Image 1 (cartoon, rainbow, N blue to C red):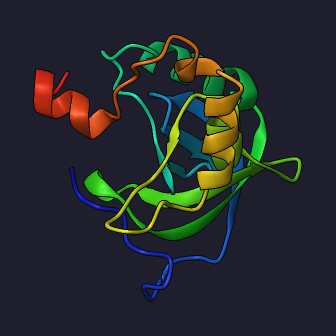
Image 2 (tube, helix red, strand yellow):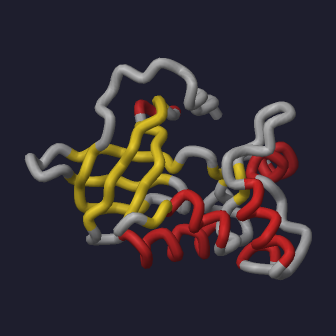
Amino acid sequence: MAAVLAANTAWAGPAALQGTVTEVYNGQTLQITQPGGAAVEVRLAGVDVPEPCQNWGPDARDALKAWVMGRQVTVTPSGRAEKGRIAATVTLEGANINSRMVEEGHAWSVRERYDRGPYVKQERMAHSLLRGLHAAGGALRPADFRRQHGPC
């Protein structure tokens, strides 16, 4: 899977987009439709969500869908993700949805080399409180799941 561009990479795209969430594909990818009718696929930046066929994958998708489907959100791009999607932070009424996914135990903070990612505090708290995917123990990060079981 292609890596998301780092936040310090020059971004030539728009500073922020607004639109209504019209589709939630999985726990990390959604579509917004802007007021002019243009649809944009968005991947939540800084989070690592279970694969759709992995334990907790459907739960993560359902949580994201419950929070944002049909709602007006702001998308702050940080780069491009695979398949031409925008990697971004999604906010709903001032709340950071990326962070909330980790806080509620539906995702991990992204890891790259020695960096524990932007939501490591939220991840540690969710793990300590046994929220979401941390409740049963033994949850596999998506990269580890793909190594052991292949893609969905």
